[in-house]
Amino acid sequence: MTAKLFVLNRLEDETGISGTGIVAEGVIFSNGKCAVSWLTKVTSVAVYDSIEEVKAIHGHDGKTVIEYAPAFKVVERRDPHLLAEEEFDERDKPVVITYEDLTEGLDD
Image (cartoon, rainbow, N blue to C red; front, side, top):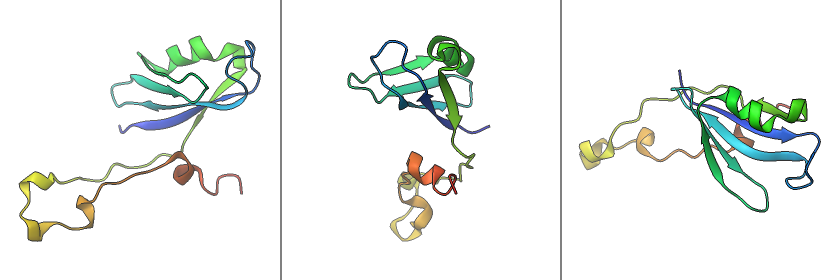
């Protein structure tokens, strides 16, 4: 299993604090634990034991939904510290993937 990305989409803001729309980004790690990074005015990052725990705490009876990014496969990465300079190739460059990259074209 690889890590799985998601966002919390708040359809209705019960408390008037976080607003509506995408209010947090998250990841489910291969061990089942989750990290959630809040995009609200006061930001924080929290770790939970499972996605079910995230849903129970932040789901507000369906007023906030978890939307998963498309699955992606982790490719083999080589440790650049173990390679001679002439052995470096495209696989050794850092990879940055944004949520927008993963969701591009899904609304079409």
